[in-house]
Length: 245
Image 1: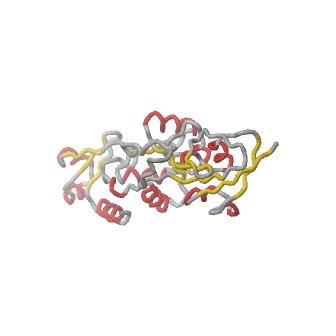
Image 2: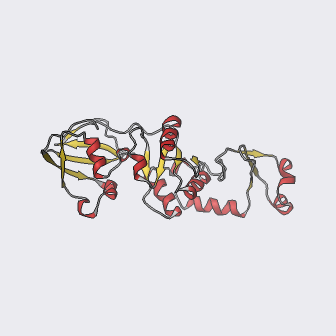
């Protein structure tokens, strides 16, 4: 026998819904007694984006069963608001902000590395591998594939709405409140290795002669050996970073 309840999703969770269900209550039909988590994901919203659920005004966890007739309100992740008196469904924010990025977000990964964020990206990662890496290494999943975030084991993840890499970066920075965590020129944009300051004489034979004569600071990637320096590109990147704050 089918049963019904009323759902209402708030703020950016509406991005996952068809237009006719956004920002208003709508009826959800089901059979049996599904958990509220399974119902939310059946509607189309990944559980990693949810931080608070109220059933008939009472805070509940993901495993609460629906029996019919309930009014369910679903709220997104609260990064800056203290909701400790209620059942917070997502684990606390990770102590260190690190990412694993899916195969469609390579340019975003490079930009995050320029800002100094440890960002793992390989163009051959399968969805299951992304989730496993996220859990094992405590990394936030960034993806354009909603299905990745519906994986049961996933705990920290964000579905990137924009398709343009520049807009993606600003979206992630603002949504995850990263503005005060930038550490530019601490990571290699190519391989994600750490950059270490090196003496100019050490790289004299590895950079163009005019570059060596004009630049004062040099860094070397501990991973791939790439050399970076404080040239025109460096100053352009600094200006670009200022625009993100």
